[in-house]
Length: 183
Image (cartoon, rainbow, N blue to C red; front, side):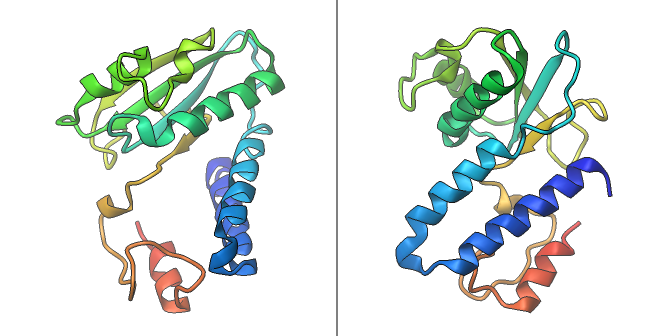
């Protein structure tokens, strides 16, 4: 298991533990705890060359709005940790038929909501990749942190969940196992 897979497994375990500890009435608090862990989690990623670029990717990005706020917070956290002059490259990936015009208008502030982190930060560069994420989108070992906010509906095989397309604290062991076996 490589370092990326280890981090993913660790994050999944932490999120599941948080969700298992709380009732639905406390989901907002759970969301805040997940966000706090999300912002701290990438800090120890191997990144020692201050002259290179820290690469972040959002797979299934659509117009970028889903990840805009959390990416802004993540970038601010990483800049605090690695230094204000650290360079970041954010790669938004989606299908080639995606409306990347909306993504770039959002990033430049032409579409103002949610506010673009790009308008407030130096040394952050945004790129888009019109590549199906079942194909390789970037060179091997080039991404430090990758996430996907809403692409479970694009899984190559759909796990069978009784009440939702998402795994949650109420999912059965069978459902959880099916998801973890997902190629």
